[in-house]
Length: 326
Ligand code: UDP
Image (cartoon, rainbow, N blue to C red):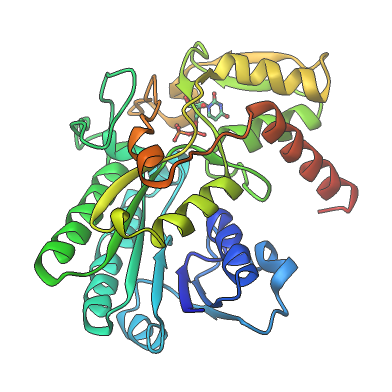
């Protein structure tokens, strides 16, 4: 059993990962500034004897050096996330996503920790291919469009991590997350499923941007957290990038209809232009589907929970929250 550090451990994905690491018998230190994460995400484990919560920012290098002492495995998930947050605050995105990763990687070289870097499908930018393998070109838009700052900053993290692997033999595993969803995800930062479910539960309308023909694949957070842990236990994953997600595409229009049908079929679905949602300098990614061949080869499996089951779980979770006044 190892002592693990999960940066961003009070966030949506980080809290699920933390629960699973504890359940496997590991000791876990969570470092989180509780900005987009929340103490409440750790409620089910808050008194766990092997959980240590450090509230602070990964942008503080002195704190980072202190926190990694005694740690054997680092899961680096803390980042500025969400298209809306990134579009609203590009300075914070760049500062949170680049320098702290470099500091942590350097500390891991000194301390000999294994390192998981949470990256994102945003690194592919607007690559027009119907499905993306890990070796695809990265195709960002102009720097005048803040959205690309997120993918670019995470691409730099990946370059850094791979460089530390090659130069210093640091054991790094990189996962590119594709639209991870599930209980505890919130809609404030733009994520589509919690927004649609909240809108439907409030009686509608569900607000779809543009024509709703955008394509995404949604993976369950529990399966994603399991995938991350298994990759970290697989020597063949070291020094490599893996797509992590579902490869079952759905249009946003169909997603809205599916959520309306499950919550209340009388809920209306409205369509508004991107400019109204994100401002005029916004560019969306029309289609985002991972090729999971590498993940399948490395682990022998890939996330496969059906979207309908995922939606039912999220809707039930939100209903329970509403019922308890949360
Ligand atoms: N979207 C939408 N309504 C919303 C939020 C998002 O129609 O309230 C669309 C958005 O334009 C995008 C898709 O849903 O095409 C997924 O958006 P999200 O921000 O969840 O993820 P990402 O764009 O990073 O894949």
